[in-house]
Length: 124
Image 1: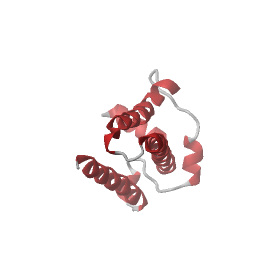
Image 2: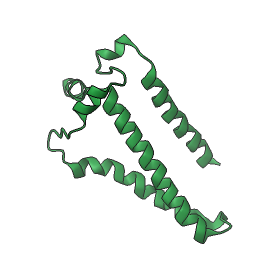
Image 3: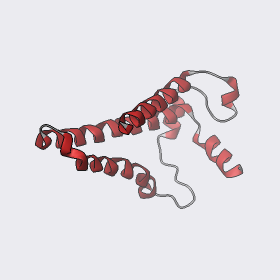
Image 4: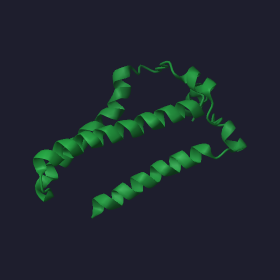
C-alpha cells in the first residue's frame, strides 16, 4: 500500500533530523547550529514575530496537520469495528502529530540562534 511507503519515508525523515541534530560539525556554526544548549533554548523561548507575522499566521502551519488527519476517517470501510477504531485512531494520530511538531520545535529552539537564521533568510 502507498500509505505504508509514505509512513516509512516520514519516519525516516524524522530519524534523519534527530540523528543529524546530534552530529557536531564546526561548519554548521556559521549557519547558526551550535548543538543542544539550554541557554540557546531560553533565548528562543519568547516570540519573535517579524514582517507582520502573528501567532495565528504561525499556527496556520500546524493546523493543516491536525485537520488532514481527520480525512483518515473517510477510509473506514476496512475496519472491523469502525465505531471504536475511528475515534481512537484519530485522537492517537493528532497526539502523535502534536508530539512530533513540539519535539522538532523544541529541538530546533535548542540548536539554533533565531537571529542567525533570520539574517540568513533575509540576506538570500
